[in-house]
Length: 128
View (tube, rainbow, N blue to C red):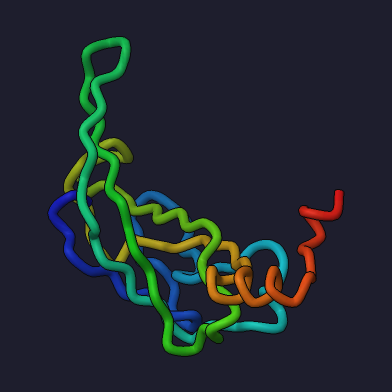
């Protein structure tokens, strides 16, 4: 996955895998999903971090930046998880892009948070 520059996900397409059941390429979980369906999302590789673990292994962590034209300015991606199937095994670093899926949550954008703060409004989490 570290060699991929861009991944495109469509709400009406399924992943194509060899070892797992097909899944929707694009899946929203949590708040705002029903009121803000996204048709497609484009994710760009923003860099890779190599982190040596306790066993001396160096797993690569790809940092993705995702955008969608159908996402209103008030919302942004709160979290994203991109999963892909390796060509030879689930741990294979070489993947087929058509096997990838994106699971995401939505939250207020930075602009919306600032506007709400200026108005004296608080999110549900701030009130707890």
